[in-house]
Length: 122
Ligand SMILES: [Zn+2]
Image 1 (cartoon, rainbow, N blue to C red):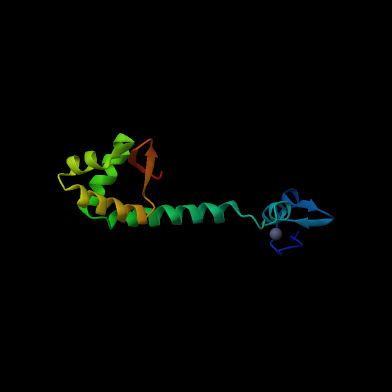
Image 2 (spheres, rainbow, N blue to C red):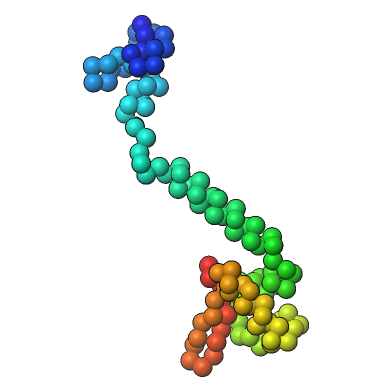
């Protein structure tokens, strides 16, 4: 017999009944699970897209920016002097690199007492 929804030819034993309609298995599950406005796949895709963009940002970083980011992600947090020493640059230069990464929302400053630490946003 024919599915009353899509018209596909279906064997009698593979017909499902949904609110009086005789439909094939595919249509039956479509009717049982109508597409919802909050589509988990849509938010999943959006998340993947954001991750992909995040990786693109990292690919665009200069070597010094990557070094600072790695350093901070490894240590959790560093002081400006420590970062400058580890990178072999002046504190002003370290500050400039930090400020770029700060604008990209990758790093942030954190004040503990009188000391300012640089730490990773994630
Ligand atoms: Zn059907």
